[in-house]
Amino acid sequence: MLKRSLPLALAAVLILAPALRAQDRSWTISPLDSFANFTVRHLMVSTVHGSIGGMKGTVVYDPSDPSKDSVDATIDVGTLDTNIAKRDDQLKTDYFEIEKFPVIRFKSTKVTRADTGKLNMIGDLTIKGITKQVVLAIEGPSPTVKDAQGRLKAGLAATTKISRKDFGIVGTALDASVEAGGIIVSDEVQIELDIELMPNVVATTSAVKPQ
Image 1 (tube, rainbow, N blue to C red):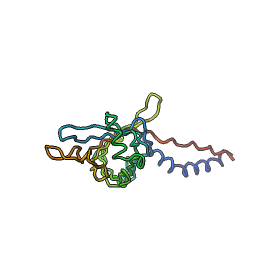
Image 2: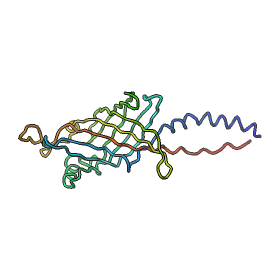
Image 3: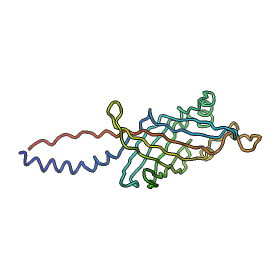
Image 4: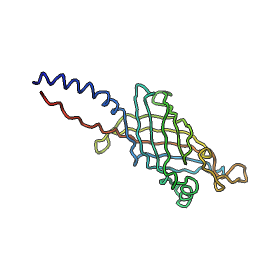
């Protein structure tokens, strides 16, 4: 009976192997440890720093073939923080309109290798219902490590620049002129993403019973 069970077990492994390999390349973004950090120039004399958290989504990473890589992620605009509560409340309600548009989404469309340990990822960024193509310069993912609970983790960082006006983030409080020329808040927004990844849990399969 054991001999007859071996071909069945081998067949099960061959059938499941592609799915298991695909899951090995699939990662989940850790919401508590991943942030979108941004900076804008203020009054042409200083820089305002802020962050948005609540990042969720999946990352597929194939070190041998970047064309198979992908990202689909969202961040929670309600977590926007520039360290001044009154300003944050105004940004959320008047400019990001979080009641109508509570999340920002990025979905990749193409990935290419840029250098050792670096990738260029093209994708669609959607803010306030407006979608524009952006390019992320990515470093990583890093080699995996185990945390204090023995869970595998990896990290990656990405940078890009966007125009806030492209996404309808405009208004007098942002765009009024200043004496030195220019406007109160720069149109260009620098974005830095710090992302922590956890491998997706691979479902256990039932063993093939001997016949």
